[in-house]
Length: 304
Ligand code: KMH
Ligand code: ZN
Image 1 (cartoon, rainbow, N blue to C red):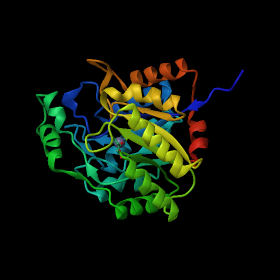
Image 2 (cartoon, rainbow, N blue to C red):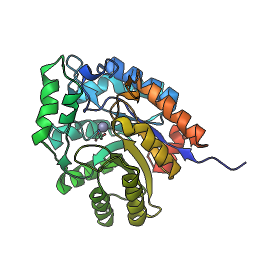
Image 3 (cartoon, rainbow, N blue to C red):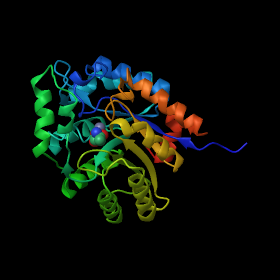
């Protein structure tokens, strides 16, 4: 029997885009984040992409003291690869955003590959009422906000993180970000096999059309050849559709409530694990196998 290709499932547990009033299932407190992450790993996620939130208001925070409240629990209960955000929220400074990855030296950290508009305001049409003041402002202010990731920012984060053996989930929201990554590889700022997480469907980045995914894949193939692992993140309702497309095209997948609150049309996901189970079913239905954390480490050349 032919060996099945292994697909890595990343679960992005809470993020900094969605706000607590949008879904009662969005993990907010350290206990909720830990529980959600552990259940996602049990369901088949081999990488856990983690952000933190203020336990009272649900506002994104990069305070390492808050991460400290859930990271040990997750590490004790799972063997999953820990991937800490350096994106934090587009409202934060780059220095603030780097703190958890520098403090905790994870195997993996996210790295946003360019400055861009990050339009959260269309969600105002869908979610009318908010429990906390910051939530409305978080969406409204995105009309006039640049998610800042200059070359200097990227080089600094990659260099400092690299000194700790941290490797990067390089988040590419557009074709140009692939070229920026190639440039950094050519200059030796990042070396080894790169992990490209292509992001589709953020307003300000590339759209979620299948042709967009195809163009991203072809361009990455041309620029990186065999030196990369490719994963796809589809925002909102494109999440599962693009996961299936990625797998069919030789890629890995990312799900989680950071990227979509939904399990199906009009149906909120009750947990991160429910999205992991769903994508797992899709992958296995397509005759792929789900990678274990150690297989993911091997494929991504992580320090372990
Ligand atoms: N929220 C995603 C679209 C980060 O944490 O560095 C991308 C992300 C950013 O995960
Ligand atoms: Zn994130």
